[in-house]
Length: 295
Length: 224
Image (cartoon, rainbow over all chains, first blue to last red; front, side, top):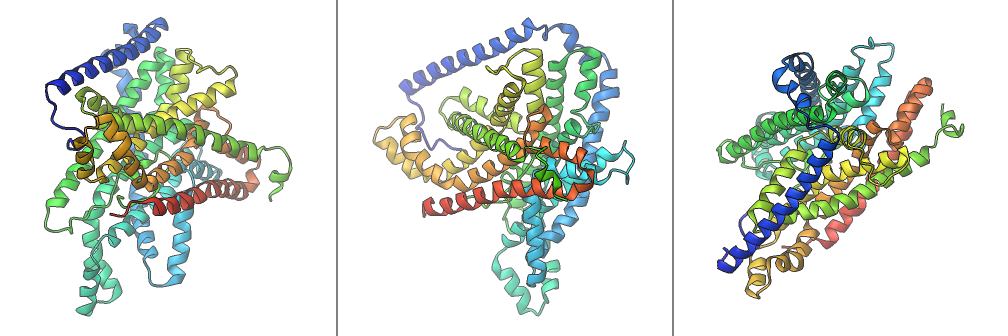
């Protein structure tokens, strides 16, 4: 954002900005002081609650890293299944045949309207008896994540293909390509470059949503380690802070990768330069709402 | 198959009413907080911009479940903050609203900021030429136009929020997802019926919101 809303500051504005900075700093400091005082009052600042994360390797090898591994595992499996399924749905929605387009559209819109947690709980009950109970939470989590995210990915794919200039289809038709050929040789390769950043952002959404299975279905993911760590070290707040930081680090790495890729794609000659908005799709924790074109 | 609906054992409407209430209170909180964050992110004061950017980028990347459980375990059970609630039900509801608003505010902020970017630079320049201050430019000239552009993205945020309220089940708020869990445990043979009813409830909540706000967005959009 350039300074559309204000001029380059002169001496008076500089003094005023300095005043605002000071006031904001005081407010921020007061807030921080209040939080720290409250935490000190309940002994959450004691060194022995925080040092285990630095000094005790067990806390990492027994709890945090395995938890993170489970989170990544559920997220990646869900992504690997949801991606082809979503691509299929996305193309189905663009079909010329109403008997394909309409049912696929109904399925996609239905699963997009339902919270991912509801799908997970449903999945959990679905596998009772069929899958042993120690692995059922993983199955449930993946079922929920796949049903939901395949529908979201379908919309991303559709938006990606629709972002291509009409002329591409016309040109393919003009040289005598059939519809399937147009899709496979002309449209999809170009659309993939436009969609990649949005798909990486979707991976962030999936990773964040695995926490639901940890909290409600007994899946042994990163978040669920909070209970075990604070049972051993009685340090609820430090544990939650560390877990939140781990999520932020992983997701931040992914979003940085996505925006780096977006920058590359915009510059590259291969794509059309169109990029499907990933940020809008990323809206959810429990539910993205699709890929609105930027207003 | 649908016996569980008429048995009177489950308060389906009550649970969805809690979902609706969670959505409305959190939406109000997220709108106010998101506006404040957006204001900070475009302000001429570097410290405020830094705070806004840091907050949005950090909170957006924390799973909502972690935030809500943090509100319950951290704020309430460890620090003893109850937000003025007295019963277990009240406290849980208020903590869930706090977590949802803190999280959704970041998306509201980003939506509004993208709306601000759709307002032509000349508008703000003209306003400044008239001698308006930053705050006046923002509230009188830019935001009213930006708002009309961001109704569709905000509708998406609202729909996502409606679905996200199910996360409150993690701290025992008696909304639709928790009721579904309870019903499935008791009515194992009616799994599909239970899922269908709850799913229908969410479709009925989100579909009209999307259609209505989509219509409003088209009507008020500034044609450029």
